[in-house]
Length: 477
Image (cartoon, rainbow, N blue to C red):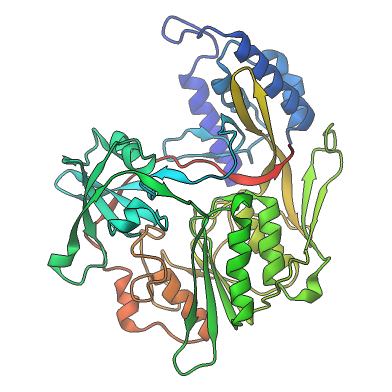
């Protein structure tokens, strides 16, 4: 209901501020033959497969086909009234769709060239009108790792320029998208034990590295206990990295681990097939062949008239831990949320640590096609995600068992969670991980660790940058 109320006000603002016709102030751009071809392809899939295709068909004649293809779908779908689950209203009151069409690289996985830094999509204030970017992840073997850039570092100066409101987007892209020819970064380290350690300068030149969504994995041994906790940080469901995902899970099965912590706090979703593999490796072998997800489509869907049923597979791994703890946040969405609901649909107990997830209970059938000179990936919302018990009602997000942004039974609170604070696996400074370990072991969090969550008072959230939409994706190529 809240989503639909926000959608109503978003449409009201949009309708009052944006004319639906060309004018001197809002001229229509010249439409090329390529635009027309792509728009025709967009229309076809919307009318045949979009989950809310009934309204599309009714209103198709009113769609503005004078727009360039890149703007066409977003402009017209935001004018519909039945598709409230396709997207959300951002902090600026703007409608952001999950459905997308974009150009992609036709190549398969290859070694990347750049700096190997992922920045968190939030700008922070560090005082005196100065801003900073927080490092969310550093790829192994990258220039950033070689220069001792760490997750949780706050970048306050780039190539001699302090980060300010006037230049932050340019500097953000120079780092995150490796657009600068070289980088000299002035860094403030949040976990520094002394003033001398707090400041770090990194000089970087682009180099090759291999990206991966398996950001970190390790086994945490508990002193004085036989518990061995497998800890996996997984930042996106991408089938290009399934081999690494299964290798990490296999290492947990071989040890073996007694418990599992799955860190999905920065996982916005992705390939449903990868989600099936992850669930299949976690659960006991007795669940093989059990229904995991049901992807239901519009009954008038021309291409896929029947639901897609996803079952627990035999992937040769069955960790079957005594406890499963999932670290989540508002950045946890789509296929990552399907992991939570899918396990619960099999009556497998899980504990959620973090904050309420995004609430993306729908997904896309993805096609890739060449039109003219462009290689396009097109992913309109085409299905709703149900678990084995027929549950799909998490459009407002999935609430955690332990909320790290407010008072909780562990006495741990970080008002800016999930803002990155420290490198992965840091049991001294990562409040979410410390709490997850306490939950798995049944122990309390030390008072020192409990107060550390609120001790990062030298940065404050200033501005959110729109992050790329991922989703629950089924590839049809």
